[in-house]
Amino acid sequence: MDRWDVLIILAAGYVAVMALVRLMAKRRNQVLSRVQGEVAKQRQQAKKKTDSESKDDRGAA
Image 1 (tube, helix red, strand yellow):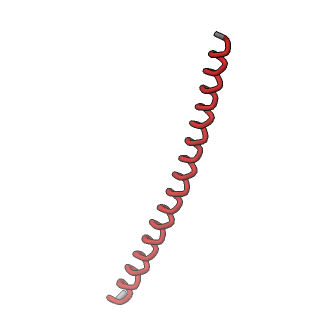
Image 2 (cartoon, one colour):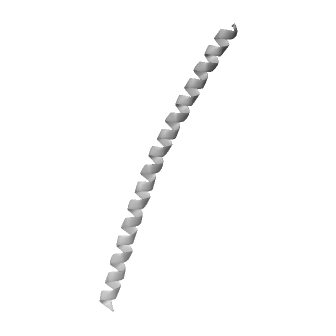
Image 3 (cartoon, one colour):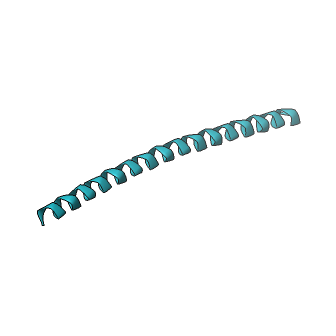
């Protein structure tokens, strides 16, 4: 292999690695936003549950 072959292989490798890094970062952000949405949903459900329990306790007293 001469110098040009090595340069082409290095350039192709760089492009491939950068594309993979971008894809992985995009996927990470998608998963993170989905998990944050699920956590927020669960917190809202827990808050509603505690609010309804506290209202039940007030009515019993």
